[in-house]
Image 1 (cartoon, rainbow, N blue to C red):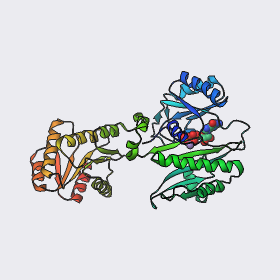
Image 2 (image 1 turned 90 degrees about the vertical axis):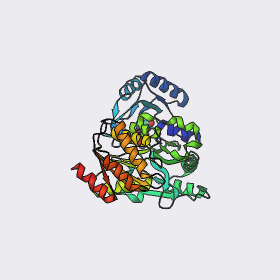
Image 3 (image 1 turned 60 degrees about the vertical axis):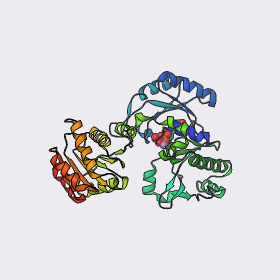
Image 4 (image 1 turned 90 degrees about the horizontal axis):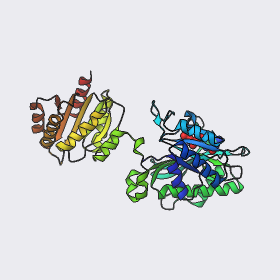
Length: 397
Ligand code: GDP
Ligand code: MN
């Protein structure tokens, strides 16, 4: 589950990580109140207005603006709230800004001796261990740092049985070129950050930039936090952080129906039982020159009701030009699934305008094929996996 910057910062802060302070607002009046409140709390007289969307690169797209007085706070918030913000990470039409974060300006004049670092915490899938990735080249596009100057990116792996050890936190501060109080502050920052990562069951923290101020404070200016959905049951209080306005509406609906659905960019809708079979089905579609429009695992109980729900969800995606149903009847009987498909098709009247290719294998596959072939519907049956993928390509031509 992706979080907004302000939510991520709240989590960091709750574990003792120093952050650029801010207050979220969804209209210009509240934005001005927030700015006044921040001045009382932090003494700041300038503010930075930051669009809250689930995408990075906001600075480049005009989603981070400095305000030097309350009139600026009001006019910038007024323009930003409701706008479609386009950044290198948003879809081409941009993402709607519903809220802004009014934050204390931490780059105030006179603080010119500041440095920006990059730091992330994530799982190294090759070793199965968490790692802290960090660089002196913060504040900029880390992908280009990785491409052009990979030696400037360091990683520190953490042994899960010991957790982050004090010498590792010191090594990070040292490699970032820090000394004195800033060194101490950085070791504390890293330690709290790693604790926050594990305790919140996150799957990604990306803090870019981490700022060193002229008075040697280390703080998170930005926060990208992704929580692990599978661990959300342990954090009831995080459930309310979900902002479904940021999510794909079809995925939200599928989730509510208990279907495991991920929207993709192609034109072949897929309905499969089992995640592994779904992955190989997508691979085969690609190998045959097609592009899957989605990942969809209907699960073990592919009955008429679920099949119909799945069809309806797949068809919400206007890019879908054909649907491939690939079901293995292990526990579920193929003829029951076939009946489910026929019933769903009939129930949906003429809602299904695209050809459907059905491959049912396993228990009662022969009876299932007969049911499909005799139904008189625009459903094409296939026996072999390859044959099914080829038929998809034929109907697309
Ligand atoms: P991103 O572009 O979506 O990654 O958003 P960030 O939160 O990283 O902000 C982008 C850039 O805005 C930062 O790299 C800073 O250069 C700038 N910025 C962030 N906070 C402040 C601030 O308090 N004052 C000023 N002047 N600039 C800031
Ligand atoms: Mn950033």
